Length: 121
Image (tube, rainbow, N blue to C red):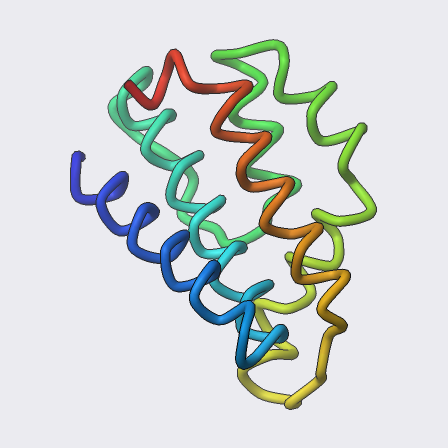
């Protein structure tokens, strides 16, 4: 399941690179990275993960292996909701997001990696 982590790292790198050019893609790439980091943790802990793109459902699943998931989701729900929305809107609707929202998405992604680093090592 290492490929999940590798793909998450790639999307994280692309999110940072997109910050200069296309903020809407920062949110999309951050969403992809979060999804894959969570799925990596779940695969590592449970040998499986939900086949969904819904961040709320993924965080609920993550809470079964790490109680900090609920608190993390609650604390950052405003940004996570925006990130999740971008999964559709950045690709199919062309909705633009501000640089401020893009930076917040990157910050939440970094915070996620910090909080759950023991699973990602």
